[in-house]
Image (cartoon, rainbow, N blue to C red; front, top):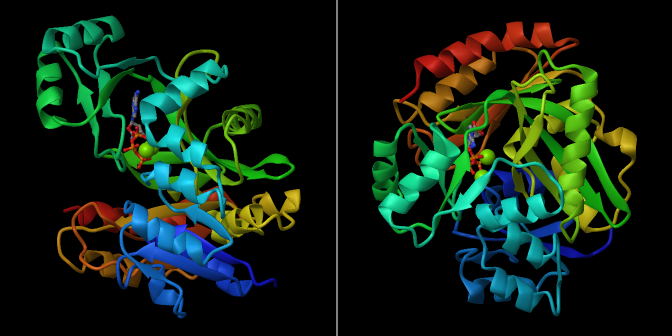
Amino acid sequence: MDKRKVGVLGGGQLGRMLIESSNRLNYEVRVLDGEGAPAKQISSHNGHITGSFKDPAAVKELAKGCDVLTAEIEHVDTEMLEEVSKYVVVEPHWSTFRIIKDKYNQKMFLKERGVAVAESVDLEGLREEEMVAVGGKLGYPCMVKSKTDAYDGRGNFVVKSEADMKTAREVLKGRPLYAERWAEFRLELAVMVVKTKDGVKTFPTVETIHEDSICKLTYAPPRNVDAATAKRAQELAKKAVEGFKGKGVFGVEMFLLKDKAGTLLVNEIAPRPHNSGHYTIEACPLSQYDAHLRAILDLPIPDAGLRLREPAIMLNILGGRTPDSHIEIAQLAMECPNASIHLYGKGEARPGRKMGHIVVTAPNLAAAERDIQPLIDAVDDQKG
Ligand code: ATP
Ligand code: MG
Ligand code: MG
């Protein structure tokens, strides 16, 4: 391939899987993150930068040696991204990161473009009684969310009653907040969208199961969702992503409501590879990581490369009760011939930390469900 160098802000599991993909095409990917970060462990060259993806000077240093910059996380310094985009290509565009990294801004941006989202109200600067009034307007339960630096539910608070509003205010003190109407969903869906120089295309629709606000499982195809609904989810995801500038893959999380019409709302968008797209490594001809790399480098992405080749279920392995409980799950998964095991090479296995994942593929979803059930049981047993 050509000699273009790709820089990545952040070197966690997403960056690591992006490197697994770029290694096969022999592209050099330079990572900005701490020493020994998961992505760096599998990429041996002298171009990595040690530092934080939140540090403007480090971003600048990374940009110097690269042709294209991308990120595995949206919580980045977008002022610096804007500045470096004067002399290096940044994909997706810096403005996309700026809009998306603030979840309230992101919702307003989508709403203005006619993309359905849960009703959201800004809480910044409000006194407690004003927050309670917002709760009264949205009804209970509702969600209070941090606008920024939120992931895996850290930054969300379910407000069940007026009294809870005070607790939400205390728990999320110091963070910029907004409130969201409760989405009465039947289930959650997600679609990985690929934005290229020519337009947008999508991977299949998957069902996601969250536990304690962290993605636990994805089902491809979704269970008990008709083809028309799955198609509507892809169309909504496309429409949601079309409004953003730049290229790359985007993860679009959606709620499928319980109402008769089966209304779809966009929950949130990630301007990068996403947990709900891990299954593509085993289940689709091209993975979300292949697609991201090709999109940012303007390389071909045949539509048929994004199809579901075989049904798949993805199970996240989180840090559990003991420092090694995630290893025990991986060992158990080795008994299953059609389970692909991914361990991320992270240090300490704190409870709830994403340590790896398993993808089980099978000729039909029922067979995949049968095979993965013992692993789900083991994960449930080991919850910290
Ligand atoms: P991520 O790790 O995906 O970035 P996050 O911390 O940004 O997560 P959200 O996606 O806002 O969190 O919410 C996490 C989960 O909480 C959702 O997937 C859903 O299960 C639940 N949730 C969020 N908002 C609502 C809502 N308005 N109504 C009902 N449930 C919700
Ligand atoms: Mg989020
Ligand atoms: Mg989310």
